[in-house]
Length: 109
Image (cartoon, rainbow, N blue to C red; front, top):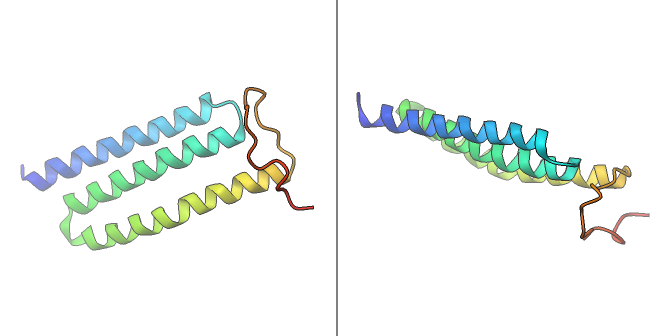
């Protein structure tokens, strides 16, 4: 077994673990805002690890995997913040345990 196969496999397993944590966060978190944050962060890291692992395991795909990682790094946070803002403006209430509402007073009228 070559080093790139071992390292690629390890990164893919780490990516799968992050996907698992994202799914667990979607179940365990109390409201849509926490679920968005848990799901986005975990799946972003899971995608980074998995795609980089595939790129290292199969070197001709490495440049494409780096482009995919850059695209995910740019789009995932924007998409999740847009979903959170749309949920807030649609009237979805945070969980009762939420203490700080930084957006309160800043909604569009």
